[in-house]
Amino acid sequence: MTKEYKNFSEFYPFYLSQHENKTCRRLHFLGSVMIILLVLYVALSARWSLFLLIPVIGYGFAWVGHFFFENNRPATFTYPVYSLIGDWVMFKDILIGKIKF
Image (cartoon, rainbow, N blue to C red; front, side, top):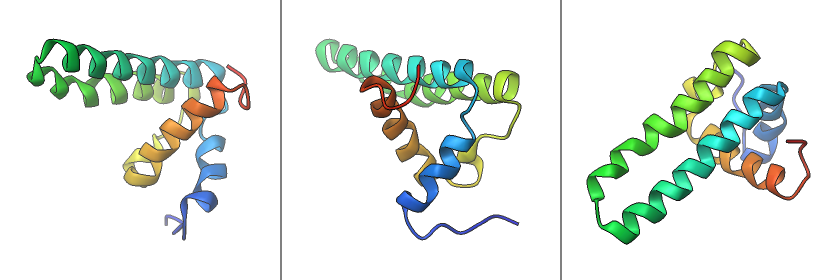
C-alpha cells in the first residue's frame, strides 16, 4: 500500500529518505548535470532528436544508484511527478550545500 501525499512538501522528506547513500545521490547529481549539458548541446546544435536521450540519462544514472547502492525501488515508480520534482530540488540542495555531496 502506498501513501498518498497531499503536496510536494509532504513528499520531499520521504524522497530524501530514499537517497541516503552518497553514491546514489552522486549518481542522481551527475545524471542531472548531464541532462543540463545535453539540453544546452541540443539548443546550440539543433539536433532535436537527442532530446530522446533525456530519460535514458536521467533514469539510467538514478536507477543504477537505487538498484546497486541504495538497494531500494526508485520512488519514480510510485510517485513519478513528485519524484521528478524531487530530483531537481535535491540537485539544487546539493548544489547549494544543503545536502552533502
